[in-house]
Length: 233
Image (cartoon, rainbow, N blue to C red; front, side, top):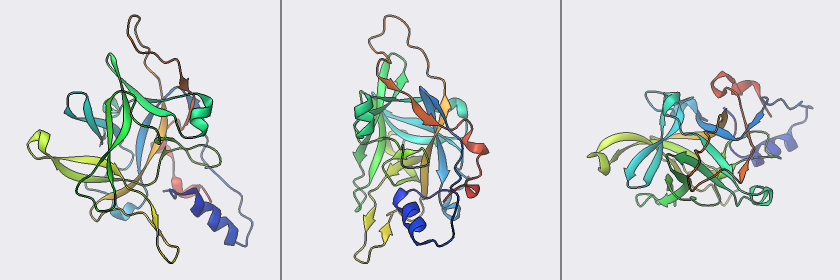
């Protein structure tokens, strides 16, 4: 399980006296990728475990979805980063997914129950919103930003109160004494959403969408095979 903030790694390196040789898992690049759930604090994992499960969509209305998780890779959504090199560099690209003849984009919707400005992560029709993307250099790992994501079991009214694992985001805050607060609610699991290389499905001729501005994404070939305790600092 790796730390979710690059600043933590840099701070640790600054105070460490021994010379530590960095060691990080090998990456590849791909047009498409899946998102794999990595529980960053195993003591807070849900039951059944959501470690190494896949991000999927939970339909909540016409063209509307929350994101959740599934142990079945076949249920995983395939994503791609859409934007110019400049948009990717400055965090203004979008993370999109093909959904039949339409495009759906990752975005955020306020969680009215939260007092920490938490948001649901949505996958709705359209381009989604900027400010969600994959980390890149100088961060040594590749996962969905911004910090910090978490997963909770929650009943959804659209399904008559049936419970789903829903993935949300909440801003990281700094306390008056300089401590980092990830603001993860009790009963929820802190997670990173790690990119795993996947084939991007071709769009048939005649559709009014395309992959013209797909940006190559860094990804891992098999996230579940990685032992995160072996990597760092």
